[in-house]
Length: 217
Length: 222
Figure 1 (cartoon, rainbow over the protein chains, first blue to last red):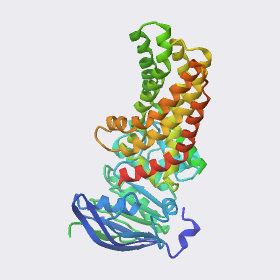
Figure 2 (cartoon, helix red, strand yellow):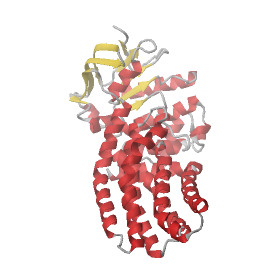
Figure 3 (cartoon, helix red, strand yellow):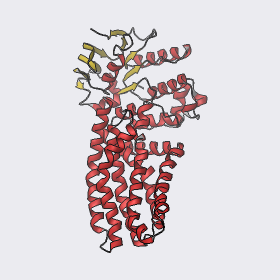
Figure 4 (tube, each protein chain N blue to C red):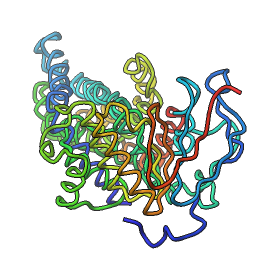
């Protein structure tokens, strides 16, 4: 999975002086961090403290009230298309279309990133998340945890250097939690980066994730 | 870039095919609204010919509106809009693809059904041709402009009604030129002038509307 460009030593996500406002309330401010290849950042904080807001800012979905996010030295707004290829975001909602089968969902998710996906690769990815026998069912027939697994399969197919995951463990059983940890380990070992929020404990073999606390200052 | 637009169109058409009920609702709405007028007004051929083009066009506007509020709202609800917005392509292409898909799914069928409805209003063959031509030029404008409204009302409560209030005034030129083209044929002055104006409107909307829609999407998703 790692491509040649990942060897680039400028490969890093940096944030400087990030602030976020929701309505009148300032959720956090003066947030700085830098993340290099093979590193993971664990964003912690209570409910409503701005973890999801931070992840949306990092993904480029919303604008920070102050500060800047840079990818390989370039502001992500300016290099939006390059960043879009390098980054994969998994939000609260899975983004799966209930009327399509997991296979079709994976194929369209890849096509939207400009990648062709053959049937064997899609089935292999579903196999990795233990969903091979649900490949042809409409996604509406799947449980919440199973849909979450399909979204994770799409993540592994995205060929992205940076994963931004909002509560990837929510709704997963013990085996699923182990699977996410395995996927993250493989991703980090291959030189990828990850920014993750979770309320559960995350045990990674590849490296000890750095922790960033967000919350009212 | 072209493949991105194709992917979006293919995706929307596949989704519409899986939810045929939703898709058919707008088409049946078009047929029923246009058919109610001859029943309510009576079978006087002179009157029917006079109101025919207007009725068919107003029904087409309303049918287009009916499916517009789901253009981005469905993807917004299930989180599928986020990967669409984060895809490494300009947002205007996403807006264009969505509008194109909306036109193929809900605009093209109207063009096919409209001549049949025109017969109910005793429109002569030349007028039916003008109706088809005006719908062929006008329905893409409805989808393109409607996309802006759908993006602006995204995530708002009562978005459907707001969308109608917001976008119907912008449909007025399309309605005037569309009915004018058919009316011109009936009056013997020809449809060319109105169809040219409609074509100019389409040429203006085609590059500008996707861009405006992309800006609206960015504002709505902030």
